[in-house]
Image (tube, rainbow, N blue to C red; front, top):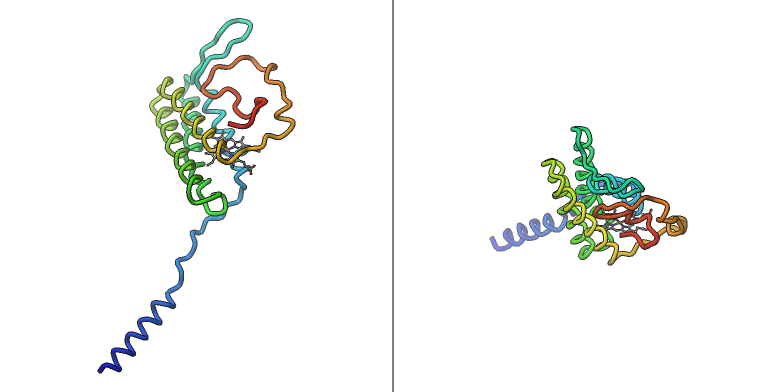
Amino acid sequence: MIVRFAIVAVLLGTIACEKPAPAPPPFQPGATVKQVMAEVLEPAADTYWDAVGSVSDKDGTHEHAPSTDEEWAAIRRAGTVIMESGNLLMMPGRARDNDKWMALAKDLVATGRKAREAAEARDKQKVFDAGAEVYQSCTNCHAVYPVTVPAEAAAASPAASPAVSSPAPAPVRASKPAP
Ligand code: HEC
């Protein structure tokens, strides 16, 4: 009897040990963090930041905001891309660590979600405010994980473009480190 229990115990032990490790998630990250930034996140953020604000030129200051269904949809899509980019950054292969990086990427999901909701509500003020919060998410992460700006971008003269008032005036193309 005791022997039989012992055998069962050994067998169970063996089964427990041979249980395969859970398969890793089937993610297939194709773009580097740099590419996600330059080709996914930055274009969407630019679209979002350009949506609402004012531009001053020689004829004065002009307020602008989306007016058509299609314009609002474009802003909403940009919000969706910003939000989901936070998840892209958390994927194995892109996450730089399991700690601060994750918190900062989650923060981008949260501010991106607000951005999307503001566009869905077609609320100009909320879009402006959410744009500023998104910008903060970008700068918070770049403060911890620095970005090196390519030489040609740093050399480009910001004086050539009209003065733009939006939550994040030309964050990366300006002659300073990226947000
Ligand atoms: C979780 C961290 C994190 C967040 C959030 C984040 N970035 Fe980045 N970003 C990085 C890192 C790290 C790099 C440098 C990547 C490299 O050079 O390998 C980078 C680089 C960049 C670059 C330079 C790309 C290039 O071609 O060299 C741009 C532009 C950029 N980010 C824009 C943004 C914008 C806009 C946001 C917010 C909407 C944002 N980032 C949010 C981590 C982040």
